Amino acid sequence: MPLPMKWGGKREGAGAKPTGRFGRDRRGRPRAGVSHAVRPRHNARIPLHVTVRTIPGAPSLRGFAVAAEIGKILKRRAARTLPTRIVHFSVQRDHLHMLVEATDRQALGRGMQGLLSIVARKVNSTTGNRGTLWQDRYHARALRTPTEVRRGIIYVLRNSAKHIGSTTVDPMSSSAWFNGFAEHGPLRTDAAPVAPATTWLLSTGWQRAGGPIRASEAPDP
Image 1 (cartoon, rainbow, N blue to C red):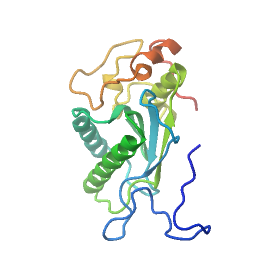
Image 2 (cartoon, rainbow, N blue to C red):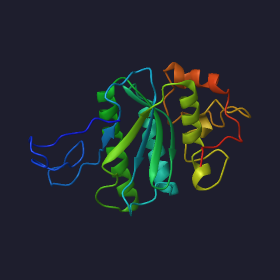
Image 3 (cartoon, rainbow, N blue to C red):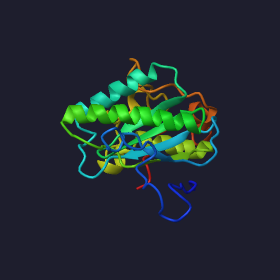
């Protein structure tokens, strides 16, 4: 459970009202970053399942042009050595799923702030949208066991099966670069839009919970 956050003075409701972890810009608009709900302590050896949602009425993230721009942003990020690494992702209509490694809680917050701010600007410029894109908070859940990590990979890479019923490789995810499917190896060999896993759980440990992921496996409804 996340620790409750206090804003303002001792009296309940006193002081400034919450505007999100990253406050407002010079014009008083909410910043594109989002605050996080992660356990107070973070272990760098434990990967995280991060979900972030757009506000109601925002443009679809699964439009081809938008998803392509998100992929370019992630590819540029993957080419750098950063304390927060996106290892797997999928783009859905109104949310993003990511499996993330971070050196500490502060690195996670800064990494998400930077990434989501850049994505918001690019989505807005691509679609002509204006204003806030993301909801005020993102959710980060620690995956502490091989079973949790394996289920997390299935949930992220096969997430389209929940929404559109497809169990094929989702082109709006990092599935094509994944080397953990039972039936085939990576379908693409060009530079991946994700960083290689460095934690044992996310690199090889998850296979102890059931081996490579089979085509018949999909997230729970």
